[in-house]
Length: 135
Ligand SMILES: [Zn+2]
Image 1 (spheres, protein in one colour):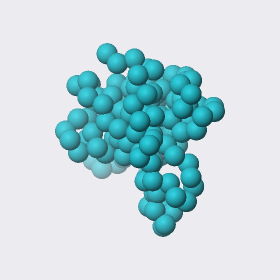
Image 2 (cartoon, helix red, strand yellow):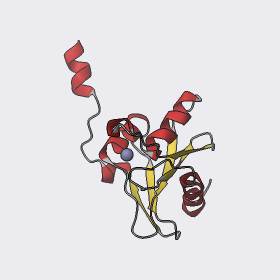
Image 3 (cartoon, protein in one colour):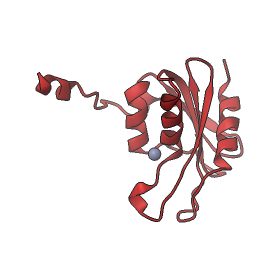
């Protein structure tokens, strides 16, 4: 299986294609599917602020729309310092498909840390209350 450092490099490659003329905050993501295939994503901003989409969710949408729904690991990178953190919306979208996923959060210098999604989104909303109320 692909290592954390290699997946982070994939995220750095994805970041090159970020479209961020408003925030200038370039983000890249690389999502490793159970199949072994890697789906890259970059943030895509819009002049209507609410229509912008994060790199992580672009990667998930690419994967799901190509038939893959099980994921092992996600790498995300933004600047050259600190560790890039997925926003709350992206954490919830990851939880939908991969509650057990590992998240590699890094920077363009190749430094990173790894946390589980369970650490990043404890007591997540899993839709169970919604399902109960529907019956
Ligand atoms: Zn996000």
